[in-house]
Structures are given as C-alpha cells and as structure tokens.
Length: 302
Image (tube, one colour):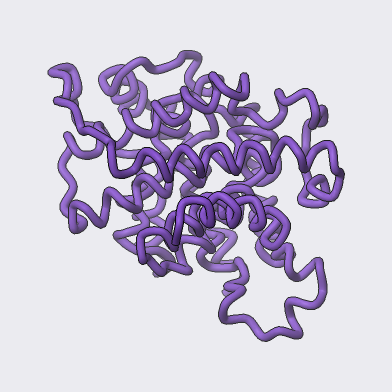
C-alpha cells in the first residue's frame, strides 16, 4: 500500500468502523503485509478515549499498538527488557508528537468535542468529525514517513529494573483462566504500560482487559454474515459494549479515574519510576480488580 493510500484509508475507516484506534492499526497492517484480525478486534474498546470515556485518544492507542505489532515481527517474538523499554520510548515519542500538534492526547480535553462521554455517533457531527479525521490522517502520515527511518538508540543505564507489565499480566491471567488471548497479544500490549508508553494516559491494565473482551465478543467484520452487519447497532458491537461497560463502569466506581497519572498520583519520566509504582500494592490491587472482573464477565456468558 502506498503512503498516500494509507493516509486516505485511515480517514475512511473512521466512518466504516467508527473506531479511531482501528483507523491506525488496519492501514499499518496493510502497509506491512500483516493480517491479524484478532488484534483489530482487540482494539474495539479502546476508541473514543478508552471505551468512549474521553481518556487517551484511540488514534494514539491504535498507533502505539501498531508500533508494538511491527516490533514484535522484527524481533520474531523474542523480547528482552531492553526491547520493551525501547518500545515504550518510541511510543512515548509518538504521544509527545501528538500532544505537541493537537494540544492534548485526551479526548475529553478537546474543545470541539466538549462532552465527557463520547459516542460513535459523534462522528456524524461534521465539526467533531473534522478534528478526528485530521488527527487520524496526520498520525498515519507520520507513520508512513517515519517507519523506515526509526533509529533505536542505546538504552539508558537506568532502565534495568524489572517489573511486571500492566496489560500483559492482566491478559496472561485472563488467558490462563478463560483461554481468551494469546502470547502475541500479551507481548504487543507492553505498549500500553504506564498509560500508553509511560505517558500517564489510559490505564494499561484496564486497556488490556478491554482487549481481552474485544477478542472474545467484538464482531469480526471480515467473517460476520452480511445480514448481521445491516443493523447499525450490531455494527457498533452492541454485545461487546454491554460486556465492556460492566468493566469500565466498575473500574471508575472503584478507582475514580481512568488515567494512570491520576491513579498513581504522578507522571513517569523513565522506566525506573514506572517499575517502582508497578511493583506497589496499589497497582497490584488495581490489576487484581480488572483481572477478576473480566474473568467474571466472561464466565457469566459461558
């Protein structure tokens, strides 16, 4: 796929998938000859600021997952801590670029949106759609011009402390209990650590759990009967959202916030600072909650 075609597709996907995260991942897959429908399904709940709650923009999340997807292929799935920290640095650079160009990476802080809980139907409002299209296109344009020129610098000496990853740990425990998930999804989910590349955005543990629910309940549009897609509400993955809202609303009620910076009371500047919080009892409690709640939701369906 040509670069200009990838940019056009990213904009078009906003109106065919109603999902800003998928608007980044799908063209990145096409550009690099990757077909992974399960990863696309896993992103269903990460649009509109983490399940339409106004947190980290889905364009940012989809790009972060896309970066990790490409890195996983480069490494043939054989990650080291150094590789993981380098990934987080690259994702953080993407978030910084987005914030410098669009002022914020949080949906609820955008002037043209101006409401707390975003819906897919918001894209039908021309004023709101214009901003989303601009961000999706600009982000994809950056990817098409940058991927071949990314240089992996030396890892700073401070980035040596081990810590369990937020989303990866949650996904691994859900898979162990329910069979939903994969090792590949867990490796790629490292990009979500510390609120997307240690940027303090949407909680990585919650995002990982939503990926598991997306993998289990979201519609795979390529393999779904056409008559099931005719109803616009089915196309919005009504079954998935019924399940995912139980998790997201429970999380907000329990912890009062979605962003890692608010949950931890700080913004991380490097891996050591993140690993210190990740190894804390507070973060363990949060991870335990989303893991148990997600397993409970899946068990109810079974």
